[in-house]
Image (cartoon, rainbow, N blue to C red; front, side, top):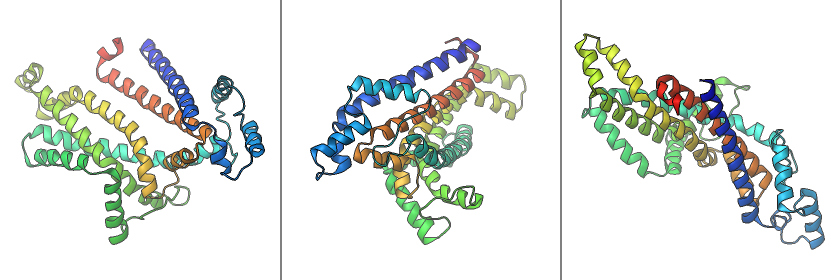
Length: 313
């Protein structure tokens, strides 16, 4: 088990280095000289040269990369080119907002998707099963921002059940915090619920038709215990989809945070991309990859517990 954990940790570190390195060079090539965008078209060549020296952009690209990588390894992501504030501090202020929404959406996807998937697996072809198929077609055909706008108009403006925009920190009010993240989380979770439910439903039906399930029933085990065995064998695919959904929800948070006016890393990514603020973009990439590595590591541990054969890979 220790070697299994060590391999997963090593692969996570390699993924972090590769993705951040690739992002650095791609951003360097895409942005080019950032000083006109930072200073405006009216800036003089002397002012542009002074800014390039201040942000270290006058150095060779490999020197810039090494300086960033060595500092990032210690948790220092540099300073923003827009406001010259530490990138780590800006990200730290916004990460709780995005994590609140994404984690809540993931929990909703897991709980509701689990319940719906089991119900559809127990009664294939039933009303709920047909509704799941219809929902999968409808939700994947609708743009995410359109669903978010509908939720804002319906539940935020018309019914006034939840705030239409804005974010309340849990330090201010736990109830206000839950109300402020409910609509964004539901908007993110709708598609994920359908995917988790479908994967669990399909896996449930596949396992149910296997010989060991018929043997368990022939031995006189109760329906609840048989369902527990089936669920354990059918869950890996759904868990994998749920982990992938977490990564996808981080990306989807950009649109949701714009619609709901949330001060998370999604809105920070948008503003940094518009002006080519490479240090902020690199810091956001590194933090996002860390989240992905942690989620994949936890998924591997759960799958290794559910299916011991996974540990042998």
